Length: 439
Image (cartoon, rainbow, N blue to C red):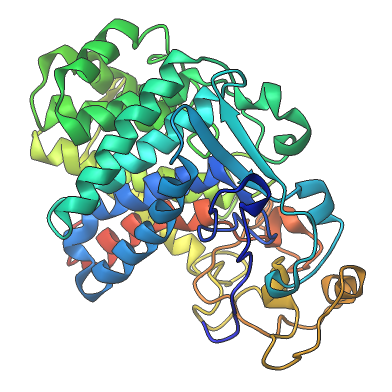
């Protein structure tokens, strides 16, 4: 990416910690630890399930995971403390400036035993545990470091319970407020630690606490805030593939999610646009499309392995059907839709030109070496000119419930890309691109 330079090189210095690295979540310049950890978990899961199909891209996928985990290791270096955010989002959002010019406060926010954050801590543990599986063969020493850190971080999440939104409300809400509570993250974190460590402690924990942590709740939305569905699919793998009988119920819980997606079944509760796109909400809807598509191809894989199907009332749903639903969603993202527009920047004949992303929308340091101060950048936000620096590969928030997409930079609900939109898509794309059409 030739148009980016270093940014945030003194991040963490306010608290005498090194928090350089990691990812900005979307089009702004804040490091939000909660969505960053979820992004890392999903990117890792993409590699775990479909890395064998990534061919020459596997090395790049691992590098992208490591860029996040190197940061998460720094953020969890002190026991019973996690640095969960760098940057004051209210001040950051009051400017429109390149990350290289950033002069807004790089305030550091943390959770600890007196100010807990089980949601962000357990998601961080999930990310470290999932990533440990990514590096198990290619870098065993790094894998072990990630696994051991995941264990201690999960212990902190479980021991000091509370939502990070309570103590950090002014800076994490409404941006990444934990609306679903922290129970889903504890179940999800335990599921990943069970997978990464094979330690029976975690299976016992899941068996003992699964119900109280919401294993069978019917909240069928999977994303950076709510992990219940992801935990169900992951734990159903342990039943379907590893034959762990005690997790039998999770196949039923996972099936309930699948049935909620299938139009025409008695349990269907999912809205689709007239053009066929899964539609959950007006703000950054594509994140649900990509995460659901990933879960569909992953669950299809587990069902195929164990020769099982999903029963939705009188309707039998095969793995092939799940893959075809996922393919339809991914095809829509890549241009098979009423707008005939790819929602991935740089892909296809037509794609979003006015992406809500500071660095992409302002001239690069190479093209314009002088600093562009805080408020001067707003002219770029409100111009109708295309972004000078294409954010190649980024998937934006997507169209509205009627398949309309205005392509306006100021319309962040539809025009802003995010790491957690892209991360689950990596696995789904790897499968669909290299499955030799085996739907």
